[in-house]
Amino acid sequence: MSALSNRVAVAAVAAVAACACAFAAPASAQLLTQKNLSAAMALTIAQTALETCKASGYAVSVTVVGRNAEVLAQVRGDGTGPHTMENSFRKAYTSRTFRIPSGEMVERLKANPQLGLIHLNNVIANQGALPIKVGEETIGAAGASGAPGGEKDEACVKAGIDKVAGMLK
Image (cartoon, rainbow, N blue to C red):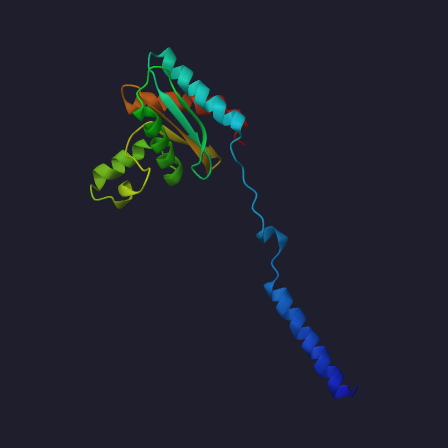
């Protein structure tokens, strides 16, 4: 092999290696590490919210959703209407999706009656759900429905989230 051929071969190998390096990403860019609610935490939140409302004389249904707004726990309280299951889910979904208390959607709609996002599936302008956060990261939400007023639903949900607050780190 001539010196020129050697240089061409070495240049070709170097070019291939450079391309391979350019397309290779560090391992940390390929995997995500996320904190998620456990089933036990979701059940604790739901049970505490249900019991808190019951102690105040309110029959509610409670839904806890995870990071992707998937249902982790859902319970229909004794004596509640069938609509409370869907309503508690929609409140929780709204809270998780927009990372806000669901009651803030009420204010957004008042400020802008043409608010387009209110027409998205499962979004509702109704107080009664709170996001579940680790620091500033929203990892889920909990919603309740059935108390006489969204502020009462929200207070029960807050009690449920407060019960696990020490584990949300």
